[in-house]
Amino acid sequence: MFSFTSIKDYHADLLHGRTTCVAAVQYFLAQIATKKHLNAFLEVYAEEALARAAQLDDSLTESGSLQGPLHGVVIGLKDVICYKDHAVTAASKILEGFTSIYNATAVERLLAAGAVIIGRQNCDEFAMGSSNENSAYGNVLNDADNDRVPGGSSGGSAVAVQAGLCMVSLGSDTGGSVRQPADFCGIVGMKPTYGRISRYGLIAYASSFDQIGIFARSVPDLAIVLEIIAGKDAYDSTASATPVESYSHLLHQVATPKRIAYFRQALEHAALDPEIAAAFRSFIKTLTDNGYEVEPIDFEYLDYVVPAYYVLTTAEASSNLSRYDGVKYGYRSNGNDVSLTQMYNKTRTEGFGKEVQRRILLGTFVLSAGYFDAYFTKAQKVRYLLVEKTKEIFSQFDAIISPTVPSPAFKFGEISDPIEMFLADIYTVFANLTGIPAISLPLFIHSNNIPFGMQVMTFQENDLCLLSLSEQMMQLASKK
Amino acid sequence: MKITDELIDELAQLARLELASEEKEGLKADLGRMINFVEKLNEVNTDGVEPLLHISPRMNVLREDEVLGSISQEEALRNAPAKNEAFFLVPKVIKK
Image 1 (cartoon, rainbow over the protein chains, first blue to last red):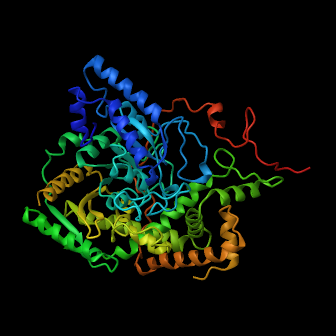
Image 2 (image 1 turned 90 degrees about the vertical axis):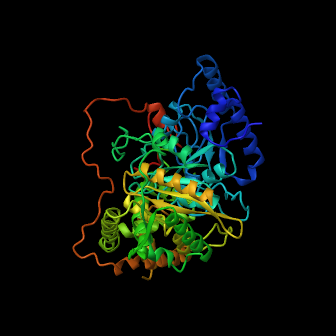
Image 3 (image 1 turned 120 degrees about the vertical axis):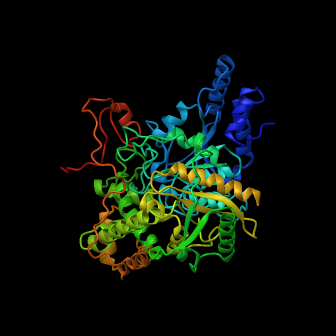
């Protein structure tokens, strides 16, 4: 019987003939069928995945070696990442029936490294949401407690790794959409430095915030995938040209970062669950007992990060989503004898869900004549201050830690107010506003048996330092 | 800030959305609350601060001016809801 612990062990088993890629894919297909009620996958590529696994098995038998660093690694894609000749809908009715005509750069690199793509995963519509309750294709359930949300927007991708439906998932993180569901589902989820992974083939929400992220069961698995998909790309001029380090090999070799800060205001915030605060404080003690210097610092902007985030991301979204007009692709309203403008209006009103429409309207407002300077430019100035503050903090510290989310996974329908929902992102949006890498580590279990995590952030381009520190923290937590 | 009917109608028109009258009241309320929420930014002193225009530190990312492949006409039309052999079709714009 196949079982998955890590990519390294899986590859050792393949090389010693103890398992096959076909056995792995069959195992995950059976798991997906058993856990169909979670609604994590919108589409499963069963036959294709089996055929590719069989090819990989044949080539291993013939050559005696693996076809790439991700040989036979079974991966799921959030439904915002393009995979040539496969459907992609952003979990929206407006892209129903849309087929990708090219691969996202990240997907191209996964395939070249030998990965098997098993399906596309449910999410909040256009990656807008913190609970996966905004999908046009239904809620995703948290496998730890089916009455609770998995987090969002990459809910399906998080649950797929949590419930053992694939080895790794790719999601996207604009304000916490990888880290927050990773926290709610008890797995590792990372948003790398802005631009570390090309955004080519990622359906845009807010282009200056969006970043592809990775879900895995462990830091080493995540590191292997990141080093494959990261790197410069002729199709995305914002992708970082800094050479990609061999994260998976250097993980245990780089010097240990020791100076860690946390925001005093984050721990004193009224929205923070007392049990999460207590677990966080107790982990600080573990860190200091093990030779880390952990210091509280003042972060006077905490209450402004979510407002700045919503002004800027909705503005970018209103612009990015203007392309859905019923002409070039996707859904078109079937009204007879309508004008071109009426066709646009009906298509967009029928095609977009409520949360997407709300955000488009807010974005249109902050960009409109008479309000632009007071809202949009103001938020850009606050973003400048945040970037300066970040440089100042990282001149004195190697990392910042915080809870990932102020509360554990909540129940379906429990938060209906859009603004209360926005506050679920209070600790995560900072990394997207400033472009720094951030990760959520599954370190804790709440008294209601729901897992929750801790967030670690490092300075721009210090993704290796982040992964190495994360691995050390995971080891410390497991020793306790 | 109070969202008037005039403002919500103008925003909907700019965003190419058609708000049903029964939804309008709810959206007005939501939008008003969202705007009040983001107005908290006014508490931050930004005198003399430049707006951050680009999060990417990379400037002038250039490449050789070469003709490279793109997508074919067939691929471009593949997902169109209404098309003929060469064009996207839209409702008639010029009336008789």
